[in-house]
Amino acid sequence: MRGFKNKALKAACAVFAFSYGVLGVMPSICSDKDSSGTALSGNITNSISEGCISSSFIKTASSFDSNSSNISGTSSNSAFAGNTKQFARSKASKGGEYNSWGVYTLGFNEFAPKLTDYTTTVKVAVIDCGVDMDHPFLKDRLTSDGYDFIDHDYYPNDKDGHGTHVAGIIADCTRGLNVQIMPIRVMSNNYAANCDISVGVEYAVNHGADVINLSLNGAPDIYREDAIQYAVDAGVVVVVSAGNEYDDVKNWGPAQLKDVIVVSNMDDEFYSAWDTNYGSTVDVCAPGVYVYSCWNDGAFEHLSGTSMSAPHISALAAMLLIENPSLTPAQVEKKIKSYAKDLGDDGWDKYYGHGYPDMSEVKVVVPEKVELSKKSAYIKVGKSVNLVYSIIPSDTTSDYVSFKSSNSNVATVSAKGKVKGIKAGKATITATTANGLTAKCTVTVTDDSNDKQ
Ligand SMILES: [Ca+2]
Ligand SMILES: [Ca+2]
Image (cartoon, rainbow, N blue to C red; front, side, top):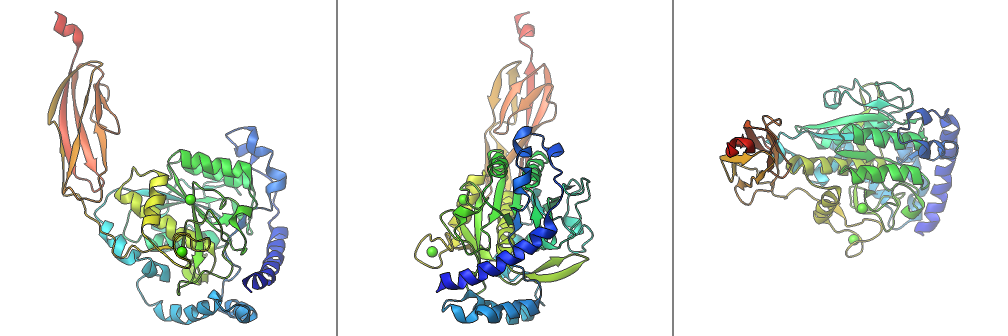
């Protein structure tokens, strides 16, 4: 029954995609931006039509309702029926503090305020069709180093709305936190060249993104997927939408990848959305039906699709990195799964993955003090000493510190606290927790040749 329903919907989506595709065919312009050389440029001609944004083509309440009536009778487990109720409720709940109902469902309204003591800044790249750079809800959350790979300038303003909506969800989920959004524009008229996506990913990594949100999908593409693997290998968490074709994610990229966090779509009654893709690489599901968020020209809109699900999880990844900045992508993914509440069939299943993360009761124990194993140390040039830190209380949920030397000409310090003498003199090593507490060690470096005299 579900399959039957899907065939009809898929046909409808294909028509949409085609019409968008005609509009979206654009001159290929990214070979000159490919810093990695020849690999990506060969991909241009066959990739232009493949980077389809993964939102449903549902923007307004009226089109939402008409779509609903077309399909509501075709499935006994229709998530869409639930979505229609959501429409009524979301109108009622718009007066709440947050825009997206997903903030409440995922417990971010309780989790995010627990993190406000942390001083870490986390950068989330939204690789999409740009962001409304003047949107009142967003403008203070945008980095100044975004890039527009369509117009080739540093003003990645959104002309479509989708990227603004995605960015708005991230901003909404992380209110009051140091989460900055780096807009990277690779799409126009709902289409992107895979080479533009690839260079966009590479750009994000090279400009310090901690998380990359990819609310897009297309046919698997080796070059685009290579760029994404480059990001993961560089320690960047990549969150991707499963896609809205009601199809197996193995047929779609980058949702077919394992090392990224693949997010499927659920509605507010915890049903899998009617059009969400499914399959072995789905990690978690998140709210993506009728989500209220920012739109172009300072507006707000409802939108549905895994495109809306992914940014909820990107926001969660960002929050976990605020607390523990050194987490690897695999650790972030594991943590997110560990918070998941199971849905559907027992245990992991192909529609919901591990379920949806519920952060409402997740404990946050903020560091109150940091201490170093030595307050002073004497080393010779070329020799080293390890500084061990401890954070109080011992059950803190943030065990991260960064190390810095006041004079790296005299002594350097590694990320793990290994201090090395470079030349005679004094340097202060400072250990700083994620909430800005510090401990210091004064290091005196002596020159070996002096000893021999
Ligand atoms: Ca994964
Ligand atoms: Ca399950």
